[in-house]
Figure 1: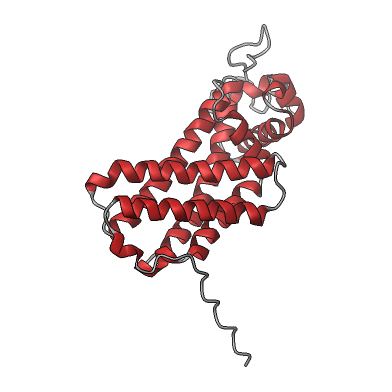
Figure 2: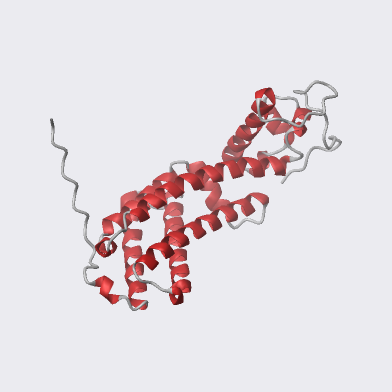
Length: 257
């Protein structure tokens, strides 16, 4: 990460503040607008040009403020990057949480385990969400194993997704009869689901495969097989009586008034 330019003071007065003001940078009014603009242009530069573009001079030029004004809001570029990326990640986690809860909310009965269409819908919704912002998806997939600050943030984001998936799978598995001795088994099950999801996203983003439906069908079949194997390993074969891949029954068409 680039450090502030040489000879820059550690915290010069903000050009947006009256001289001599000791007021902490606010988040309302002009102060808040400047801070928000710095965050916005940082995300845009990061997505468009990568980490190399993130210097105080490049950021302030893009934000349309004098360079000394940067330090009234952030002590250095690393702090700004962390703030900006965390905002994006928090929004993505909130939206992916909504999508995931909707998916797991469909699994209410034993027969739902055999409904491959429900599993497919979950993958489709998740991939559409991530790939709907391909520049963010590129950053996540590129930097999630990088030792940089950005890499640390992306690893943290993937870790949160891993925890969220596990909690949802464990809660659902318990409702179907999995017990405490199956905890590690379900934890690795969640790892497998996350791996399939990230592999599909990377393959589509890199353009190695262009048929999204075929990719979703493939990882759905793999997930279904993993689910069946885990149910059998847990000794819950009674759940498999109707566990044959089948399509959901289409909802009846609305009756025109």
